Image 1 (cartoon, rainbow, N blue to C red):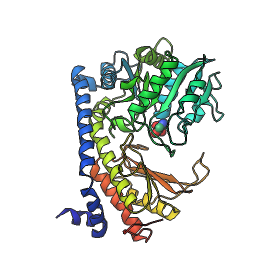
Image 2: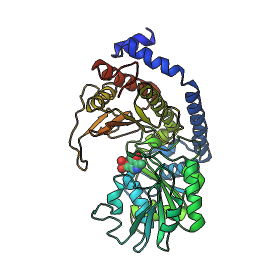
Image 3: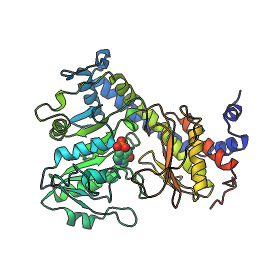
Image 4: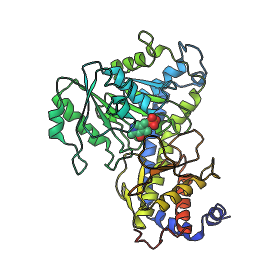
Length: 431
Ligand SMILES: *Cc1c(COP(=O)(O)O)cnc(C)c1O
């Protein structure tokens, strides 16, 4: 059986297969570059594992208090060394990315301190953490104030107003690497380094935290390599490699990470407690696989950008831009197309492929939202997933794919659905 017929047996018509293949031929250099980055990151992870003499005893389960959990401590050393940091907190007790960010902030901001975001509005869920939207237990409720400097119209940093915003109360700045669900560009690690240097030039002791969600292993350096004091993310995104069933991480300066440990558990206890509950193999192995998993997801994103740009849609990032995270947005311009796209992604999933995603009224959103995901780990967005609000410009945001081949199938299937329903013209010029 050749490739075309196996795809046909999965529901991809020869016409769509050929269309995709034609585009793939032009992506060889891009893919080679992605592989090169993955190779460097793979070596970084292996080197950290070797340096810390990872062995089978480090995979044992601990329960109860989790005192002297050597495997847990070695995993944290492996993260710290890969990110070139003094320390790391990597725990299943950190329940998600928002929790990790909230922990890093609340451990290091005291009443009277101010938090500054020099890159515009933070990720949705942080609005309640900070208290931008009133919320019980927010930083605001504890007497921490917040200031924000928006990006300039071209997406660059507003250095002049950032300088003005820094004052004697400014204790922490938060920089979000990925655009998340905004339309601004994602920042390169180099850009983040420039911003950190600028801020520290004004106030050297300010603590710089980077929300690294979706960014890990996309480049060969991480924010921690360019001066970030805390680098924070979720294990059900990039660094969990698809195997981590739960967790978050904070890497950075020893004194700041110590405080995060005390905030996570209790003053006096800190990171000494916290049983691993038997998931350490998944956390080690997932981290080991993460560079290649991220590479597969990136190939999918680049493939999709090129397909949909060729068809005449606006894609962010565009087909040729360099990548700083794994998210791809495509402005599909109609609700029918958004729905068909998501149904294609769902139909290509290894899990729940038979269900049909429907738009629904998701709490906290002012329009209906449609989501597609057929994941082994619930809610995991390093696995192939897509979603978007049903409003102009009907943009779908999609990310992930544990393997490039699955990402490819998902993207071809989305195209197949759009084509079957007569919603696109393969010759381009779609509006
Ligand atoms: C996903 C994400 C978060 C929050 O992570 P959750 O695990 O969903 O809580 C925060 N910031 C960015 C940029 C993200 O992509």
